[in-house]
Length: 360
View 1 (spheres, helix red, strand yellow):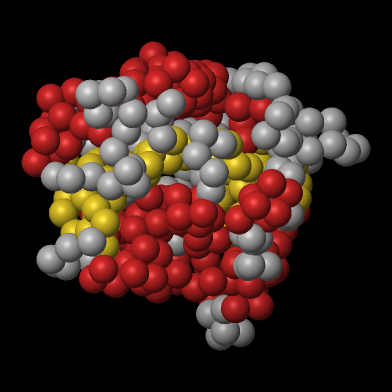
View 2 (cartoon, rainbow, N blue to C red):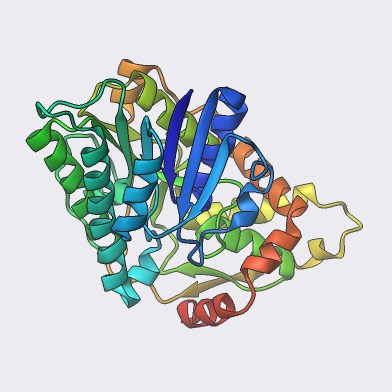
């Protein structure tokens, strides 16, 4: 039985990955989830698996070397899937030090602990061990509006403290692969959406606000372009890279689904109106009149677009979920989990939201 150590598994992508892995492999794998449970980490995301005998949750910070060493000492870890990171650009602009600490130093701790546990006396590594570092397309900077794509060979050009900290963590992993021949891979993925996403991110924010009749904040002119990928497709890509990918390689994971932010907002309004019964009073206020343009984010990259040619050609992965289907599935999930949304949007989040999205 393979044992997976998943960092940040109570967060959005991490929890979806854990659900995907148990759905695919059932009781033939074991998962240890280590998460500090910051604002974006929610134990409710994993209620369905928390009683499984082959699932263990450890509340710990990846920057806590002793805690991470203890996990490796007490368990024979076969795979590390490293999601844990501070990930919201706006928060990084307000407090960059936290992002450097978690994303760079935390990754160094994970690498050092895995290296110490897996390295043999001759400097080689135990057979079958693999470390996967989950990163972002934002490390590549911004593309022109009229063409071009991010490839694995695209030079790094991060523009925010968040993307700079992720670029730093990527470089650490690359250095360990080159210096120690450490058995690792890196994936750089486009924007994800789906269940369990914290509502500071665009899609759940717009869904939540629209259902409540609140203003829908859109940065700048709304024409910034992102490449959207349904989170379950990302989980599948991560699993396939760990099982089929060539060691020491980076794989870009993209959705072939470029859309302007304002397009996303309008699609959500239209989809909500289509999904709500005509008798639902919320339909009346679901119009584009809710859209409110707010001051643009500092250093806001204009366009991201991933070319996932390498992962398709080498591993056979391709995105499977069309956006029109994925957004309906996402909205249905939020319909069915209104209590979850209420819980994560109470208290301090409301103060943060009001500060970040002041109208022009």
